[in-house]
Length: 144
Ligand code: DQA
Image (cartoon, rainbow, N blue to C red; front, side, top):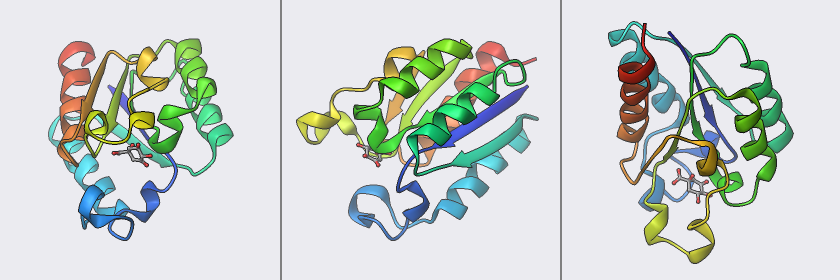
């Protein structure tokens, strides 16, 4: 099984950006965490991060035909990007949304998720563990 993990803008600043909300661990630590989860589950994983909406759309499109599941934290684009929603719908790859923070308990503008409309599940507020839950969901349901 092949999973693509996509992280959106400013998640490369993990550990530096608002540590009270997003934690003190770096993006490199997140990638290591995800790779460890996937190794235990014998899942082939690629972690992709971009600060650019179009690059995220391009990466989703490039997954068509070669990826079994997508885990996506679109970060701020969650709340604005119809283009990322449409890309997820276009490729029809099972997708799960993750947020480090509990967006439902934050500002009202974070309560809307466009990408989430194309995702089977959302894990928000579990920190790094949300990525593990998303990977476990996808491998339990689609693993082979
Ligand atoms: C985030 C929540 C978003 O509202 C925010 O813009 C982010 C990170 C999270 O992981 O909690 O950049 O997606």
